[in-house]
Length: 359
Image (cartoon, rainbow, N blue to C red; front, side, top):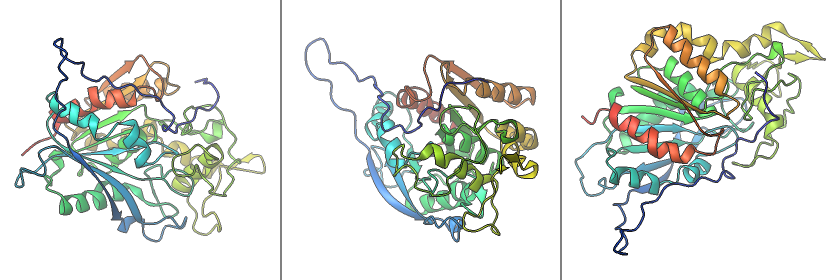
């Protein structure tokens, strides 16, 4: 599909207006809803140890605890794990999602209380792609096993698959589908928002779209410097995007100092390397994971009608439907990032309130 020039995925600059309750006609201010709290912790990922990029296996994680958590000391809660997008961080998305206030308002409006966990996947090349690679580390296992095990030990969770959900935006939407396919024993429901990277084909000159578009791009433009986006800023993220993909999908421990292969060398496509991009595309992978996806209680997809990823998200919905995998797709009035916070409150939280078990 044709697309405009690369759009930044960094959402620190996205202006999101969340609907706030209006004051009663009497002029008396409506009481604030009960308040949850946020904690910032560090989680050690055994699955990330020894990664060749040199990223720390000790990952920042933001945890939202619902309003009743401190008072009802024997109560246990379902958990929503939320994955952020490329070039961004957990802190950036906590601001975009307006945590903790947004979840507090949703709970006050009737959404069931849950713990919300945002792991930080910012890496040397500005994003992990939530993939399994000796170069970046095994992010699939970190998200599906290491992190839930830590959260279940530290907090009063309902430590079962039926009480865990996985969601994310853009690269996080890609990660939601990838990890959901490959680690189905960890999560019972998936919600992928504006997923990038659903179809990647370097041999055809089409990039993975982590920059907010699926515009054509050369496969030899990775800088290899890893100067990134500066913890959530745009920075050199465009140049790093191909390196992030190559580190995740074409690792090569025998190719220092980068420890990955590029799909193009001296202007020529390297067919075996280039084939790894489509092999890591959910639109190609999905047929291999039908039994896993059919175990999900529910799968929801959404994308804006002005998002450059609208076509591939529609194709994912069509592929899942063709394979008799129950799913829903909503195409709404919006672009790639302008309604993420609003839809987190109005769509994502109610979805998991319905789908996750509280027992």
